[in-house]
Amino acid sequence: MPKTAETKFVNSLFLTNLIQSQYGESEVKIKAYEIEPASADINDPYARSSMNRILIKYTSKENPKDAVITFVAKIKPTEGLLVEQFKKADVFEKEIVLYKSVLPSMVSMISKLGSVIELAPQLIYSSETPSDLVVLEDLTVRGYSVENQALGLSFEQSKMAVEKLAFFHAASAMMLEENVLVFARFSKGTFHNEYKDRLNYFPDTIGLVAEMAADLGLSSTVAEKLKKLPAKTLPKAIAAFESDIKGFKVLNHGDFWTNNIMFKYQGNELVDAIFVDFQNCVVGSPIIDLVYFLSSSPAYDVLQKHKDELVFTYHETLVLLLQKMGYLKLFTPSRYHRSYARRMPRTRHPCSQPCTVQTNRLM
Image 1 (tube, rainbow, N blue to C red):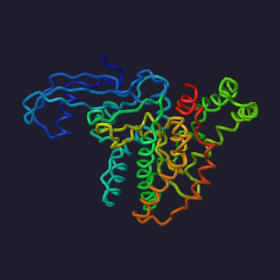
Image 2: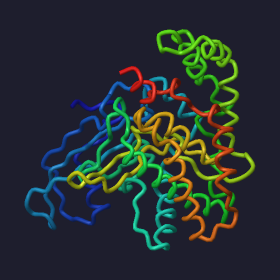
Image 3: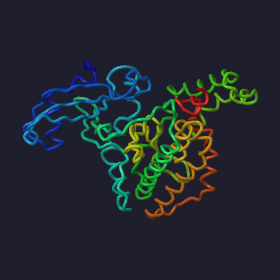
Image 4: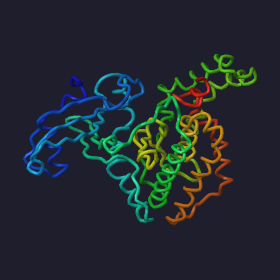
C-alpha cells in the first residue's frame, strides 16, 4: 500500500529505532516492511484517526534469523475535515494519557484483588513528532478479533463485555475517590455544548426514523412522538453526558460498542475481551456506556431475551469489585435501575448510530 500523508514518516530508520528502544534489541536491520489499513473500512467517514498495521521483517543481534513483528499505528489526521475537530478537542492527547498512565493504574489496582486482567492493547510507543502517533500491539497476533456489527453480539459475548466494563468502571471510580482531579481533562464527552456544530446528525437521524415509521412497522402513535423528538434529543443527550452530575461517577469509555471490543477464543470457548479506541472517554454516570452498549451491540433477540440479565450482571460485578476495593459510596440496585430508566431516552439510541438492534429487526 502506498504511503499516505499520515504514514510518510514511517521508514527503516524509524522502525529500527522503535525496535531498539522498545524491545532492547541491538544491531537491528530492517529487511522489509509493509503498511496496510488496520480497519476493515478504510473510507469510514467516522474514523477519527488513521489506523495502520505495520508488518516488519528484520534481524538483530538477539534474533540473527529473520524475525517478524507487527504493530498497529494510530496517527492523528493531517488532512481533511477532522483536522479542525482535533484542534478543538484534545482527543488524541487524552488517549495517550489513557494508555500511558490511566489504564496501567487501573490494571495495577485490579491486580491487588488477585485478578490478572487486560483492559486494552499494550502501548508500545507514543510521540508528538514527527507526527502525533500511538503505536500499539497488534491484538490479532494473539487471536483477538472484532465481531460483525451487522449480526450483533451473542449473549455470551455481551455478558463478557459488560463484566469487563464493570472492571473498567470500578477501577476508575476508585481513582476518582482517591483524587477527584485525576480525570479533570475528561470532562467533555461526545455530546457537549462546545461540539454542537458537529452533532446535527443526531436529531436529523431521529427525524429520518420518524419519516420511515410506516416502513419500520411503527404505530402512528409512536410515529407522532418521534416527530416531536428531534428538537429535544440533542439538549437531552448533552445533559446525559454532563460530567458534573451528582451521584456515582466513573470514567466512561464513551464509544463502547461492537467495533471497539475485540474478543478472543480458544477453540470454541470465549476467553477474553479487550477494549480499543479511548478517544471519547468522559467522566459521568456509568449509564452512558451501559445504555449505549445495550442499544448498539447485542443481537436483537439477545437484547429482547437477556437485557435485564445483562444489566444485573454488570451491576453485580461492579458492586462486588467496589466492595473489594473498599469503595464506600455504594448505591443500591433499585437506585441504579431508576438511573437507567431515567437516562435511557437521553443517550444514543439505536436509530441514531450504526446499530444491530434495528438492523437485526429488518434483516
